[in-house]
Length: 271
Image (cartoon, rainbow, N blue to C red; front, side, top):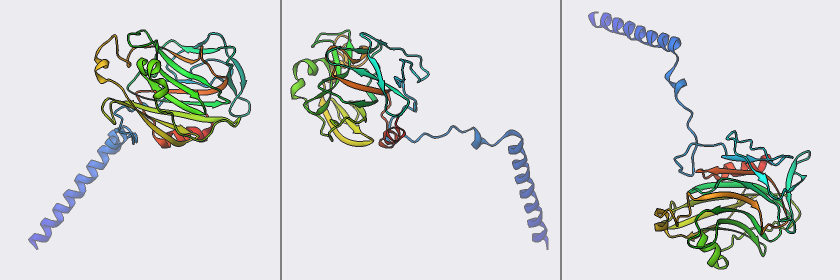
C-alpha cells in the first residue's frame, strides 16, 4: 500500500513538472524555433552563402539584382536582343564590334566559385576573362573562358593563358552550335580536391559534361606579385577577342561551389 502511494505521488510530481515545462515553453517559445535552418551543403563548402555575388539578367539594362550593388558598363556598348523566354532581353555581342560588358571587380578571383550564364550562337573567342594588375609571368588575362574549335575551355593563371594555352585540355561536351539557348555553368576550386591544381567542372543545360584538372604552382600564391587569386581587377564579358554571341542571366557565386541539383534548378527555371 505504501509503495502504491509513493508511485502515485511520483507520477503526480512528474506530470506537474512536465506541465510546468510545457507552460514555460508556451510562454517563452520553444528553443527549436530559435535554431537556424540547416543549409544542405553537399559540396562540403564551409560557406553558407546561397545567393549570388552578382546577378545581371541583362533584361534591357545592366542592373545587378543580387542586392550587393555591383555595377557594370558597356565599352563599347553591346546591343539588346530577344532573351531566353518571351518578353525578356539579352546582350548581343559581335566579333566585328568588339563589344564588352565590364565589371570593375575580379568577381571570380577566389579559390572556389561558380559562374552561370545563358548563351546562344557563340562563335570562336573569349566569352569572359578576368584581368590582373600583375603581369610578372604573362599578360594581364589571368582567367579565361573561351570557345574554340567547337569546345569550351577554362584556363587559370597568366602563364597558362599566354604560354601553354593550346596544350591545356578542352572540355568534352555536347554541341552547342544549334541556334538554341544553352545554360552554361562552371564550378571551380583551387588546391582543395587535389594539391597544386585547379579542378573545374562544366555543366550544360543542367547536366555535368566534363571535369578538367589544371596544374598551378601553389607557391606563387604566397607572392603578391605573382599570385593568381586575390589580384583580379576586372571581369570582362566579351572584349577584344569577343565571339559573336548572345548572353543572359549572368550569375557569379563568390566562394561557393553550387551543387549539381542547384545548377539543374537554375536551368529548369530558365533564369
